[in-house]
Image (cartoon, rainbow, N blue to C red):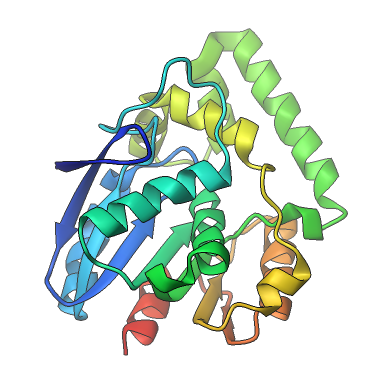
Length: 244
């Protein structure tokens, strides 16, 4: 992986292809490694496909101490990467927490994006019932910490059906995971800001998406003016569509 200086930290990234710029912003408890197989497919579809480890994940750095982050901080990293690689405006592909980062760029730095795919965007402030799910999630984390420390807590948060390699990747980046957990609710755009986004956006959820996550995606799709809503979980198909 190559490296650039983000907003005060080293960010490692990988890229494939030489077409239209595309930046993947990965989810909480993930890393660029899980997206590497998809980068080749996106490159074949005509993209210069880039994925990076967000701060605290994979091979990227993190400040000391690093106990929390914000969506704004993460967006500054993404913007620094796009500028350093001279590849904006780009198609943004944000997953989970990464979808919030992509939205922040659409709202605050629209010159860096021409479109976006938002996979399971956790705009939970728009979902009143989400508080119950978040409380249950916190209990799972606390019980995991008591039972087996950080590694067990991350495994419990991912769930029993999680792929073993995904669990191991997440456990290898506890700083990133817990900073994301602390900062996930750090940003909630106004309805007016979302209505002001003019770029084409695909909002994607998976068949197994939790009800409150699907509701958050529905809320985002209802506000974004140029949107396509998909429930099939096919992020690559949504990206190919926007690449044209």
